[in-house]
View (cartoon, rainbow, N blue to C red):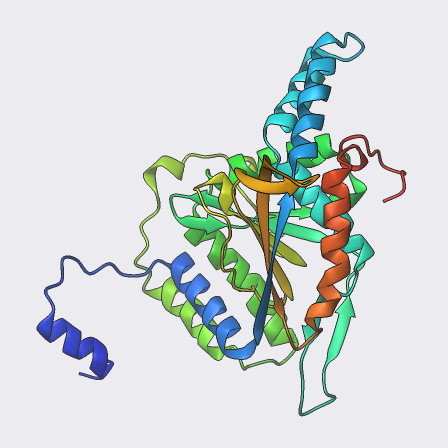
Length: 323
């Protein structure tokens, strides 16, 4: 009784293998992304990048690093690892590109009844990135990677990724929900009453059992709420997990843009009137069309291409250098 009629029909006519209650983390994701799909007019763009020069640079500098005796073995190992895994490079290159296109690094307070809405251009560039865990995807945040060396960005990503996989997502999402609800109450914003009820229901009648393998993990080895909230942009790197050229990304409010990075693959390209194999990636972007038009993204794509074609601008960049 009181069940969605289409679900009721299926339950009556389709044999069910198992009924799995949604965890609190899954409920939270469902709630936020449903809100996103209802309220945000999504638009997207797909750009293919030739990263052959980046691959060549990584090989050349790796050979030089192996001969270098001026740095410690630990520092050299880190730099060599960064040249085998390009995640930190792409995240930092996106941050640098957002620095040059600040409209994309913003958030929108859309109030068509009160004042028509306000677009806030953020000074901080806080990029969250996706980590696949046993609970699903968690998105830790790297604050201001454009102001850090690539070695620092890579170290922070490694630390956050490890802590993500030692964190009970249900516990973390509850704590994040409490933080958001406290802010909502201070603002007398009761439109999120459904979210408040979802948290209260979970606290009173929780159906999520703590993961036994995570019970004894020290608090300092887990993600904290501050590691999860405050992103101004998200990068979903599906190329790290599976073969695929692009992904359809859904924006996490109040962010206005989300990037999806495909896998690194060989593809035929025309270079100097010759068809040759080149190393390629695909960058997919989804943006909130209320805040800006597609033309706002064009300069970003140009800046991103510039960093790929001149990788030394990322690898050799030090704090204080020109971005």
